[in-house]
Length: 122
Image (cartoon, rainbow, N blue to C red):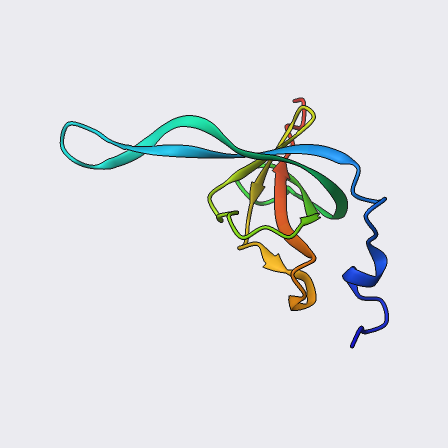
């Protein structure tokens, strides 16, 4: 049963029109046997709907300035997206901040919560 205002009800296949790449870093072992980040690899290229839903700017008494924009990315259902993957959307790089989840557990769409750290130009 659908709930009023649900993400599934608000998203249609026509809305999924932005091309994104989901990338991961190949894990390698160094000479001591420690796991280190390796080369960047493309996991998949898919179409998505991208919602910017929150921005945060902290300054004042804190030691550093942080400008963040949070995004919710909706794609067709996939199970292979990991929390340490990144999304490339145009010239933006979005870091996944929570595990991807199936919208309403219907295996139609997957939602991914991401954050973009924006340089403030100072």
